[in-house]
Picture 1 (cartoon, rainbow, N blue to C red):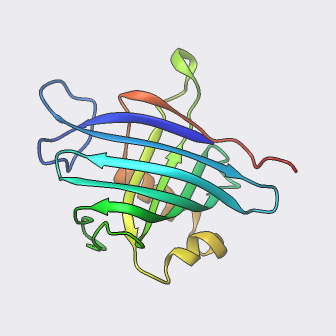
Picture 2: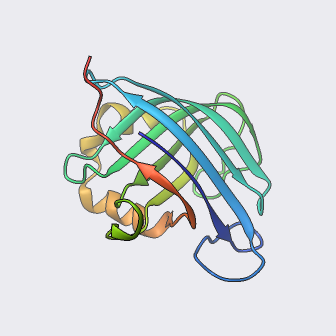
Length: 168
């Protein structure tokens, strides 16, 4: 799975949406390989110019929802970062912090049912990231949908690809 793109955000980088005007860019890219045994590895980058936040991460966990196989929740460890994560965690984007984001692949080009979406880029308190990686069933589908709806934003340009685990 992989993806990249950008969204236009409010000048302070808080709200991202498809609006005209001079807005701050929020850019992202990621690539992850999910193996049949559930292990994963990959890389991600994020830059929110409006808020002065950026980081690089090594990805180690990908949870593809069984009820929505076009949606994946991803956890990584920051290898570089600066800026402060927004509420609720408020944990600085510093090397060693855990980060969580989710992506949604809604198809390709003009035939897509909806735009691809990405959510989050929040730091996760130590100990809580394991729930996404090891016990994702503790999060009801309605809760995951709520988080995606509340915190998701649509890339203005870019593409997200969510694929089943590779065999072998």
